[in-house]
Image: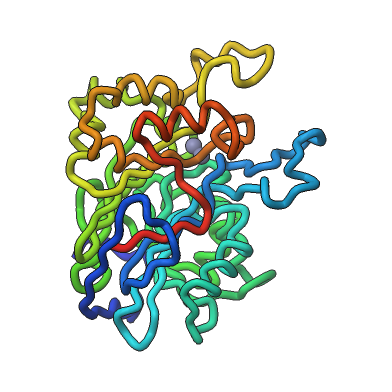
Length: 321
Ligand SMILES: [Zn+2]
Ligand SMILES: [Zn+2]
């Protein structure tokens, strides 16, 4: 048993068996039993961003993007099971998208929410589970210890705990939680500015494929200093959703971004330039700031990323695990 439950529950984790095969670039609706569905690809504030009235996304909904979130789906049982990675400010729309792609007749029908950290794009959606909205019951909310303390000790989040809208499940770094048969999640710590919580990334292991999820990190080199090489982590999985918050310095007019706590995509492309093509193709950039030209389907930056052999996450893409 990996978790120390703050409030114990009879929540049962079901299991079944399946297979699923998909080319890494085949992101059409998956005809497989276990899959990852991308619900959002933007940085915390989404696109368009508040107070950016000139963003064409305000008048063209096809350009709008929601904060980064993944859903993990297991259809191997009568009762489709679904887990969210992150509870974003867009959780209402994202759960609706999940309901369309992987319907359930259960109210809410979320078997768990895995949180990475206490920056707004990653957890404030929990508020929609409370009495004022969904009135959810016992949604298992997986968090690292400081993140769990933050939710447990601060309003309004502690009301969700008190009223049992959510059940906090405290994780430990490197300890694997088995969700169903051949489906598990392992958290690890990531260097990223940590005001209210530590920052987690996840490795999701499916029946046939595995996923790395690192939406926010200060720099790959900070990790090197701790003896963790991102290339080694990529080598162990089939799909890697990696922080692509900013494309390059200069993206935000008038600001020196060299100290911004994210690896620029331009830097990641250089760092990963000598990886074999199969390794590059695993990388699916995600968590793009509203200023990031990768959002623009016709940008030269987007074309350069794809030409170099990397991929860019798309909302609605579903990959078989
Ligand atoms: Zn973020
Ligand atoms: Zn963050």
